[in-house]
Image 1 (cartoon, one colour):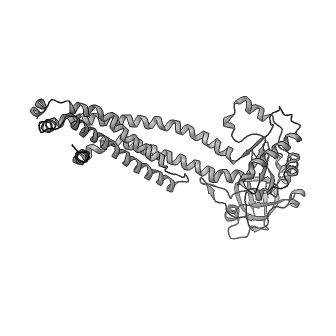
Image 2: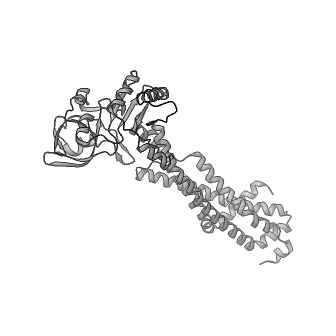
Image 3: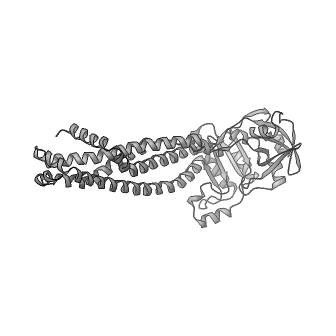
Length: 413
C-alpha cells in the first residue's frame, strides 16, 4: 500500500467523522494553543522590556551607579542586608565620576526610591499623584528627553536651588489643556514652582505613561524631601561599545575615592540596562517552568482520548480490516493505516492549536498593552508535540488492528 494511499485513507476517515475528530483533538488543540499563546506573550514581554522599558528606565548606551543593585532577585538575604548597609550615593561621588570621565556625553545625578507622589495645583485645578524627581541638568540628556516648549533645567538652576520644574507632556494636557504651561506657577506641597519647560511625549510602556512627571533641581528636591536612599548616578556614552570600558574606569575611580582595598567588595552597584533585562528574565523563568507542566497534562489527556477513539475505531471497522486482509493487505499495511490516522489527527490538532494560539495572542496584543511575538521554535515544538502524541498513543491501536485474525474479522458485523 502506497504512502499516498495511506494518507488519503486517513484523511477520508477524519472527514467522515468530523465532529468526533474535533472533540477527540480538543485536548491537544487547547494545550497547543495555550503553549503558543503563553510563549508568544512571554517572548513579546522579554523583547519589549529589552527594547523599551530598560532603555526608558536607564537610558540608551548608559549605565548607572547605585547604592543597591537592580537585580536583587539574584542575591540572598545576607547579601541584601549587606547592601542596605552600604553608604548612600552622594554629590561627592558624582563629582568623582565627572572628574574620572570627562569624555562621556553626559553624567547625571538623580533622586531614587522612594519617589514622592504629590498633588500639583494650578489655580483651581489639581492633578494628583504626580511623581517628582530631583535631577541635575544632564539627566535630560541621559534619558533622551527632548524639550517641546520652553527650556530644560540648567546648571544655574541646580546651583541656585531655583524653584523651577520641567514637566512631561501629560501634565500639559491634563492640567493646562489649551493654556501653555511654560511660565505658569504651580504649587507642590504648598511651595510655588515655575514651569520652565515641557518635554516632548515619550509614550506609554505596558499602558503606563512615561509623560506624567515633574523634574526639579536636585538641590531644591533635597531641601524639600531629603536625600533618597537610592540616589543614582547615570552615565551616557556615545557608542554601545564604549559602555563596558567606561564602566571599568568609573568603578576604579569610585573604589579609590571610597578607600576600598583590592580585596574589598564594591560597596556600590554599577549596572547597565542588561541588569533590568536579566531581572525580568528571572521572573519569566517561573512562567516557563509552569507552562510545560500544564501543556504536558493536556497533551497526555489528549493522547489518551486519541488512543481510546482509535481503539473504538478498530472495533467499528473490524469487518473492514478482515476484508482488506482477505484481499491481500498485510498486517504491516493495516498497522500503517491506523497509525497514519492517529498521527494525522494529532498533527491537525497541533496545526489548529497553533492557529488558535496565534490568534489568541494577537487578540491580547490588540486589546491590551501586553505585546506578543509568536516565535518559530514554539510553532515547531507545538506541531511536533501533536505529531508525537499521534505516534506514541496510536501505536497500540494500530498494532491491535494489524493482529486481528482475518477469519474472525470477516465474521464481525
